[in-house]
Length: 352
Image (cartoon, rainbow, N blue to C red; front, side, top):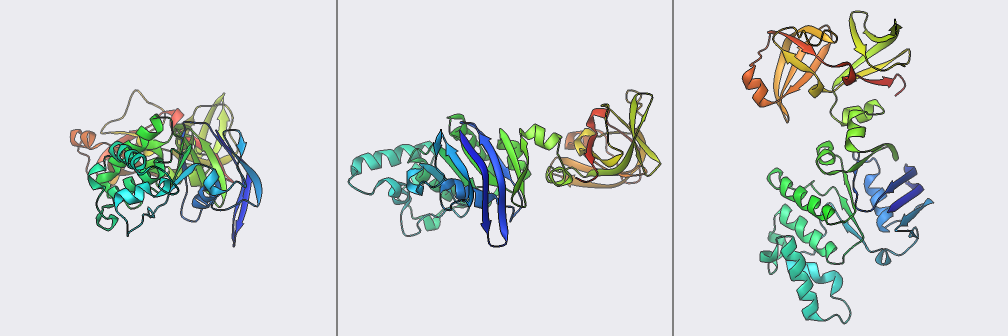
């Protein structure tokens, strides 16, 4: 297990502040944040490239806060791979274990084994100058994994990978994690977190602002920043009123949302995920609450299929699959009905 206790570090005008997280062994932990949020700086502290001003770092029950980097047995793969351009792939992979009096045959045997596992055996005699981004990524991984690290740190590992190769690299990361390797993967891409993480931490301004499983973080964001990061576009400023034991949210005095639950603030923000909203050409008798008539104002392709914008007193953004769109070919200007269950309403306090 990796434990960070109240880690703080001042770096010029920027500061990591009071970061405390516990990452169980075997976890695939994605640290999600924008550029300049502190995610790479936190990796460097864990790896030993830098030392915290305050706090402690524990790994497998050992305090490694001020331990030398070469004694931590932590693997770090940089965003730019940091391979040696004047060496072959074999020489790059062997570099970290070929010093001293190690048996050359044993070194080569280990290189052949790890290169086979990462499917780069055919590249061993090639110079790294002529490799693709995906190939360089595997070489950098092999050079790190050949030391059998107890923790693998990945700094924006997909940033320079072609879209056509990303699925292959993701499968490789998942396989490594399933073998028992603990991985901390930093990225700015929400989709990487969804597809890889068993736990997610969102970092902003040098602080961890939310942590949990992907479902906990992205289905129940604690503030507007996390909500926007997870792709939520439907935000409504509302006032909450209870009547006869039922809670309603009033938006601009015209639109009324029905809510589940039994306690709400006086006012705040109501969030609805685009894929939680259903759209049809007729009123839904199965969902009398939170069912609204609207007019389609825009239709755009999206990563999920199609995004449909509906004006229904407020603007709603709805994601549907391409198959659904082919079955129900909505068009701009057409009348539609949108609906969503009460449980789809996410409430944030005003000050968040």
